[in-house]
Amino acid sequence: MRYAMARKAGLFITLLLVMINVPVVAESLTLKSIMQQLGKDFARLNQAILVEDYPEIEQAAIRIAEHPQPGFMEKMSMLAKVGTDVGQFKEIDEVVHKASMAIHAAAGKQDLNMIIENQNRVFNGCMQCHASFRKKLMAVDE
Ligand code: HEC
Image 1 (cartoon, protein in one colour):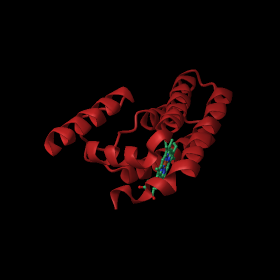
Image 2 (tube, rainbow, N blue to C red):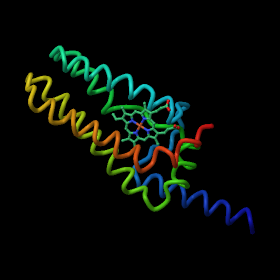
Image 3 (cartoon, rainbow, N blue to C red):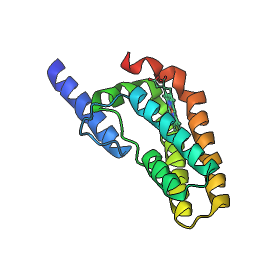
Image 4 (cartoon, helix red, strand yellow):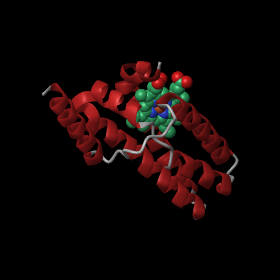
């Protein structure tokens, strides 16, 4: 009986993850290590913008846009902590994704204004998510 319930709960969580577009295949990276890499890629992006190195801007932007996701178990534990705010979490993640894709496209056209506009969007997204979720999720992989 308990086992059946646990299985149902497991199925429910899997469905929920699929619904919010989280791949069910596990990856070994932790959220923390992904964020540390994002920090480096963002610094690289800013440096490239300062010296107007467009190929470098393009590369850094795509690395931010296509950052890896944490493994399945960590995602489950993140979901438990984020709870009903998961929509907001996903929304901010999407803002960062779209803005970094826009930087990637603008770099191809050497459109510095468009790059800077979206650089601000990316940074606001980073800090907005941190303000709402960083403390809450910090202990996840510890
Ligand atoms: C959708 C939410 C979200 C977005 C967007 C986001 N972060 Fe994070 N970030 C987090 C969370 C949660 C943590 C805390 C992780 C931990 O400590 O385990 C974090 C932590 C960090 C850390 C600290 C890692 C450490 O060693 O303690 C850095 C650096 C970082 N993020 C960089 C970035 C950058 C740069 C961006 C934007 C390009 C960004 N983040 C966007 C949620 C987000």
